[in-house]
Length: 77
Image 1: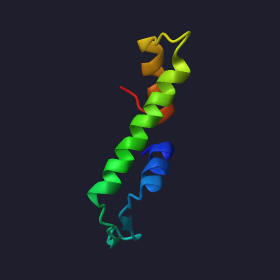
Image 2: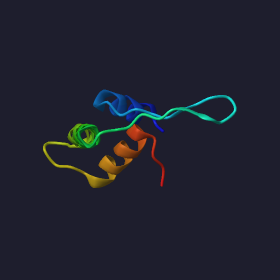
Image 3: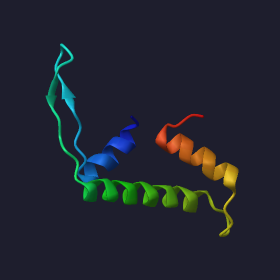
């Protein structure tokens, strides 16, 4: 998972399952629905910020936005 995605998830209050060295589950944090909604909201706002930063004179160039989003989140097709 990309570091920025982890940061957004933590900011939204989403917990992660921790594993010990033998692969046993140590902590399984339940994630309430409202935290997932907050995470999605933060993710969308982050995407909007990328789109705005890639626009030129109010015009959004889709290839630039797609490349910017992929690079920002570390996502490759």
